[in-house]
Structure formats: C-alpha cells, structure tokens
Length: 398
Image 1 (cartoon, helix red, strand yellow):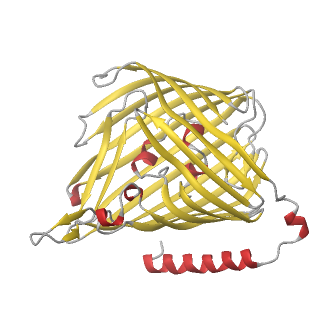
Image 2 (cartoon, one colour):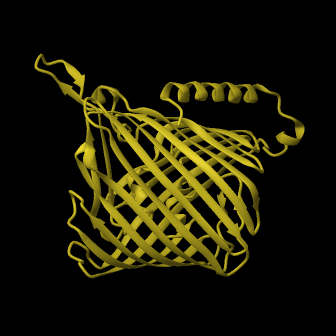
C-alpha cells in the first residue's frame, strides 16, 4: 500500500500521461471507430423480488419489493459518452449515475462525474448483474459498490487492466461545502493482471487500494463560529435481502482521520466452471484513539449447466455475462468481521452461505432463484441470530 502523498503523486503522473495521450493526433484507423454522429438511447432496469423467511424471522416480512428501478439516457458523439440515470427504491428517488467519458483510444478512457469507481472485482459488474443475485455482505459493509463524485483513468489490454482516480466521499454529495466544514476526499484504484483471458479459460489476479479522509459536519463553537466537527466514518450492512431491510452490521467510527483499505482478488475459469474471490482489509486511523480495523472475504463458485463456456470482458477485467438461454448455478460464501475490541467498536461478525440459479432468458431479461443462510454474532445493532432466506427475481435491463 502506498502512502497517501505517494498515491496523489502517482495520480498526478497518470494525469500527465492521460493529457499527453489526449493531445496526440489520432490515426485514421482510430478515428473510424468514432464517427461524428450524435446518438441518444434510453437506459434502465427494473427488479421485481419476492421473498420468504424461515426460522428467527421476527423483523422480516414475507412479500415482494421493487428494490431497484432506474431510468435514464445515454448520449454519444464521437469519442464522448454522457450518461444520466435516476433511480427509485423504497420510496426515494436518487441520482444513480451522472458522468461524461472521453475515449482516448479503444484501450484508454477518462471519466468524470458521479459513478462507481473501480475497487475490486465486484465493481466490474453492476449490482443487478451479480451471479449471487444479492450484493455480498462484505461489499456492502466496505462500500465497494458506492457511487462517488470523481475522476477515473482506465486502461486495458490483453494482459492488464488499470482503473484509478480521485473521489469526493459519497456522504458529501448532497451537502454543500459550508455545511460540511471539510470535504472527504481520497483515491481508489484497481490493478489487474490476466495472463490468460479468453473464452473458456481465464487466470486473473488483482489488487485494489483506497485512501480517504474522514467525513465532517459543520458545527458552531461557543463563540458562534462555524467549524468542522471531528472526523467520522459510518459502515453498515443489512441482511443480504432487499424485500426486508433488517440491520445486520454497523460500525460508527468517531475521531477518524483517514482510512486505508486493501483488496486482493482472484478469478479462475475453465470451460463452464469459474471461481471468483476477494479479500477486504480496512484500517481507520483515529485521532488519539486506537485504530479501527475490519476485514472480510467471499468466494463464489459458478457453473453454466446449459450454455456455452464462460467468456471474458477485458474492458472490465471480469467474466462476460452468460449468453442468452444459459442456465447458471452458483454457490457462495462470505465472511465479514466488523468487530474490533481494541477500538471499542462491536460492529458484529457475519457469515452467509448461498445457492443461486440464474436463467438468462435473452439479453434484456433474467430470472433468478436464490437461497441463503445468514448469521450474525456480536453486533451492537442486532442480536445473535440466523435466518433462512428464499427469494425469486425477474429483472429487465437495457
């Protein structure tokens, strides 16, 4: 892990390379890939979930939900792509994506706006495209799939993938700087090496790192002057189901200065069988208090029962979505340790085991059936308990 000042220095060097590449005159062959035509297309998704809960089910209610409904527009003109998407979930309308991307060439691009930066294998695919159906508990807790205001430079070729850029913390998006006192800022990156990456055969290893300063709120002191509060971070996760949102883990870290997180990843595939895994480590440095440390991991075994071999997408450094008419089965395990006695923060320890069947009807529709056994111990926001979850989902995306 690089020190924060070295991260920013490295980012500045990346920026210089990007600006140099943008200033170069493109060749005719590259220009032919980006015709000067203006196009606008709708983008969106809708998820329809039904769920049943068994054993220790108090707080959970059988029923249906629309956990994610989104609609937006994507416009392209030559090398430029602009995207804006709004979402509706659980009675709230929220901005989900508002970004502009410039393609330097087919292997490099620069993106700016409000979007999910690269950090770990899970950020390579959208939340609704997870083969496990539900977002994994460690990724929820360590805030992997969280959109931020930021900039990202991305590079990919047959062997490597790089995604890196600065961010403004998500909690600061809805507030102006004077209400915050001090803005949370940082850097996220993902570096991947895939020496073997093709249809039916993938070997990939990667490492992601992140640095972010603490969040603050504006407060008035005894003299009536506005000052930033002491720094803080809030981390949490509900049980891995959307139909009932029940707290599972929570860690409120006070007197925080900054956090550093690290996440190695592994992806292996042969034919119609694949294994994905990721480890998370986070250290929150605090002022005059012991640091808060948390860790987690997951492993997902995937297999296509009906369909072709797994494909690969080098632009995202992840497996491609299985072809239409494919039936995929997955078995997953995740572990999250948010408990740090040294820091006096008892966020809890969570485990879950899952089985998921996904049928890819066509390029727009997917049907999923999901079972999970989830448990939590030692959490300040939840008693020690287990829950059995059975869910079904119909989703559309375009």
